[in-house]
Image 1 (cartoon, rainbow, N blue to C red):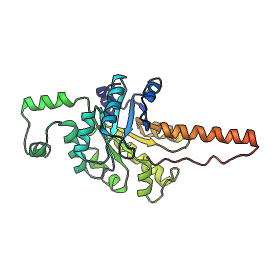
Image 2 (image 1 turned 90 degrees about the horizontal axis):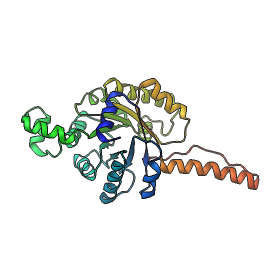
Image 3 (image 1 turned 90 degrees about the vertical axis):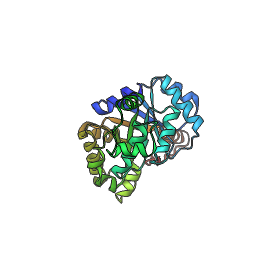
Image 4 (image 1 turned 30 degrees about the horizontal axis):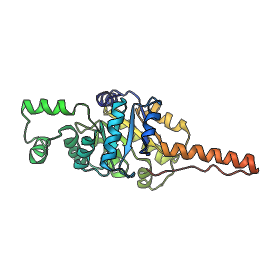
Amino acid sequence: MNGRDFRDALHAGKFLYGMMLVSRSPKFAETIQTLGFDYIFIDTEHICVDRTTLSWMCQTFKAMNIAPIVRIPSPDPYEASMALDAGAEGIIAPYIETPEQVKTLVGAVKYKPLKGIKLENILNGIETPSPELKAYLENANRSKSLIVNIESIPAMENLDEIVKIDGLDGILIGPHDLSTSLGIPEQYTHPKYDAAVREILSKGRQAGIGSGIHVHYAGELSQEINWCRETGANFVVHHSDILSFTLAMKRDMAALRAGIEGTAEGNGETILNI
């Protein structure tokens, strides 16, 4: 899936499937190509990656027709611009809480390479771009998506205004930060958390933009499935390579110890806060 198809699917409510990739090994790209993903989520907020490596990853997945979606380290328009220069087809901005933050990021993603006072004036309705400039910017950025992380109570309080910002293509829940902001850290089955997730996902889809949650903990698939089916959430970010590896190895090592030594170990919930 290319960037334009990804962006169109977010708004159309079509389901998009992918995962977070932590490994920087080129071998993983070959393996991921066999999984049928629409996109790959590359995180630079919590995972260390330099600009050269990021660019190689983006260009590789683009060549495989898997849209590279990059979460930038902070909600900074210059960070967004750098990721787009690297080849990202979409930007995920972390910890967004105000419409003003979204508007600034729209400027970076949808009006690139325009910057400075002229961009601010256009975003604020003070100045209208010439027909030539408007056509140029639309053509240059038509395949780029902007998604923002909703992961706090203030973000939820401002969500009705956030989802109205022209140029925003999707919202993505950050489970760990959201649960912490709600005062119930990592309690992903808590009724309060469940209600918050459903409210956020529903508002995103009602606004006609993509809506999703990054499920990065070991839980029942039924929870993830029900959220999507019951709210219309269509941006499915399921686990990560490192979590899948951890879950599989914990299961196998417990079975090995039980079979070889006659012992058993608990299969406690695995949580990776990324």
